[in-house]
Length: 259
Image (tube, rainbow, N blue to C red; front, side, top):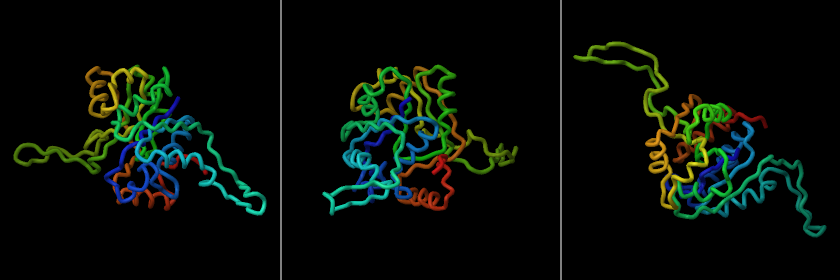
């Protein structure tokens, strides 16, 4: 099964750094957040990736083209014809296709553009600017169990404390612990989709979230998978620093793989 990662937007909410490179290439612990996302998928056996690039897409291509330079020790021997020797070569068992899906293409349009790379297969789809410890195996199993076109992972990003129910005249009726359904359940990506979804996307101007997903809802063809672990987007410098601090502490919840 292939994993598609949306990585083509401008990243305007974190423009302090995204003006120099695509947001998925912003680093946590000296490696792009895109790499962290792929490492999670790889841990669960997903080894083939399609990157929907756009803004500064050449940076993503160049990073993968020079992967050994980023992960290995290198000797440049100028005394012998400018040879390059790679030491302690570290490679991932990945197949990565980086597709230029356009500079101003909407999210649905980006998905439509990679149709030929998917074929008639179930595929995974997520965003290139957030990490989480979503159990991909359980997510796929859940999707297969219900037979709908799509599954989207949702996460409670709201209420985090106990809940008080108040009745008439401010009388407290009961106390209870927080439920996973309290607060706002938000779309965090980590979707599983059937190829039938391509037929619902019109063109480059189609927004996947507000148009395609709503059409799936109207068709009763979209199920939610509630993620109860860790998830964090990287929309601001404050969120980036939070992720960096977790990584540097050695307690990053999304690091499910072994070094």
